[in-house]
Length: 89
Image 1 (cartoon, helix red, strand yellow):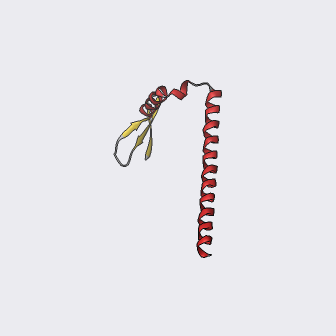
Image 2 (cartoon, rainbow, N blue to C red):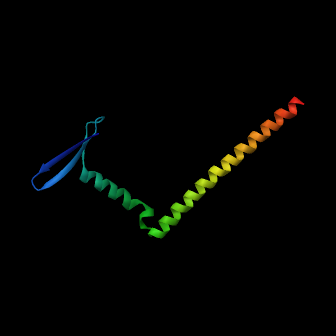
Image 3 (cartoon, rainbow, N blue to C red):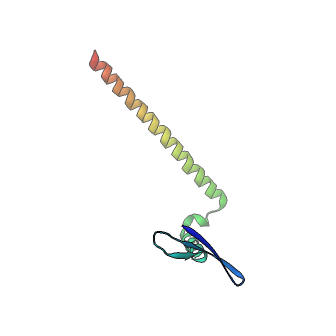
């Protein structure tokens, strides 16, 4: 992406030129699209404390899922080793 800074009169604008599609998008259009997407999100209306608790809950859930995955893999590897030892005897 190429960033082009232009000055016209008293206002400055930033134009992003996409090398793949050769389309120019102004900073105002990007800001308007972000505001429209933000207005449609239900998380925007939540208070800051609720957002923090939600982020903490999702993070803890992710950590415990990974710990459970590691536990399951270790148990599976132990069973495979036990079966191989039983077959050798």
